[in-house]
View 1: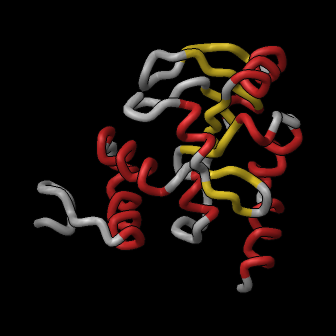
View 2 (view 1 turned 135 degrees about the vertical axis):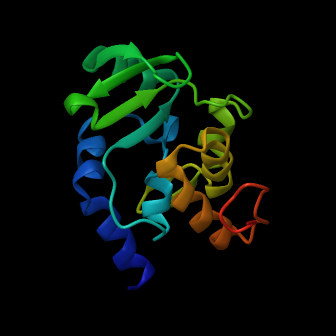
Length: 154
């Protein structure tokens, strides 16, 4: 699939369409979680879509979403469609600022996606059972050395 076709395919994904329908300022938010893996062809499907937002995008999300607290970091979250799309104003772990995550994000189909290296760091930190295959895929894609205890290091 060509780059243009991949980008159009990304914008056609149902969760991405829901995210885009929120009309958050695209300069102030980026897709995180497993979404960047989908954008880069490392995943074929997603159960939900996580967004990190700042300033006007975060304020708009708070006005329209169901406000709650993140299960992982305890930070505020605005949930849409029963949690299928969640918007956060910080990302766990907070090793990198929200501004840096958004400003350095990759553009795919005109949408910002947090860099894969940050996704790998996040998934390595949590290391939930569902993250293990994602960690392996990210390590292969990034040429990152396997960490002790990872499936590749065994």
